[in-house]
Each structure stands twice: as C-alpha cells, then as structure tokens.
Image (cartoon, rainbow, N blue to C red):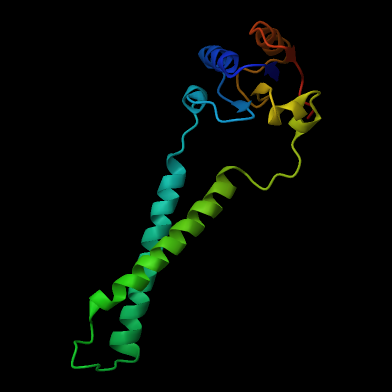
Length: 169
C-alpha cells in the first residue's frame, strides 16, 4: 500500500499501476475522486441490473397478486365494472415496484461491496487513520496474478508516494 497527499498524485499512480498490468487494485480516499473508478476499472453496471430486476419483480408480483385476488379468488362486481379493471391496479403495482427496487439496490450494494466488514487488515497500516481526513492510499492486493512481494514494493516505492507499507494478512 502506498500513501499520497493529493488526489492527482493518486490518479497518476493508479494509471501507472494499471498500465503495469495489476488488476486487483483498490484506492482509499477521504472524498470522491472524479475519474478514479474508470482508472481502476470498477464496473457499476451490476447494481443497476439488480435494481431493475427488483423493480420488475415487485411490479409483476403486485399486478399478479391483485389480478388473482380481484378476478379469480374473490370477484366483486362494483358498479358494473369488468372484473379485470387493470387501471385500478397501477398505483399498487408502481409502489411495490419502487419498494422492491429500493430493497434490491440496498441488499445488492451490501453484497457487492462485501459488507458489513467490521475489520479489514488495512486498518492496521500505520497512518491509515488519516484516510478519513487528508490522505489517499492505493493498495495492490496479494491476490493479484502479477504480485511479487519485493518487486511490487519496489514498484510502489517508485510511484513517488509519501510512504509504502505492507498490509498485514
């Protein structure tokens, strides 16, 4: 893990790390850094797909539940209207679609981010507590295929950071 004092230095280092061929790279910043996700190759398309699937499931469930209960299970003729009066189903269908979309988004975010994680080895790195105020960190995971303890440490040191630290396992 290498420490930087500015977002520009972090972005430059992240570009060099990705150009070097490392895939398992993570950045820790005190604020959002525009463009960093693209540099690191993070893909956020899964959460949108989960939200859409949740919305479609919720809307289908609501519409099907109303259709079953009003048309087949307990039909009531109200004012001579047809049994399948679908416009009256729209508000509940919309509301359940929104509810299931929100639940799918929340649970999907937790699962995709592997949360809750109450402790992570990066918390043991000296100076990492400053990531919440004014420091920027870039970490290359030991799970990366190109990782070699000594060569990776030398490469991270050549990026011009303030300090290079080994994350305890």
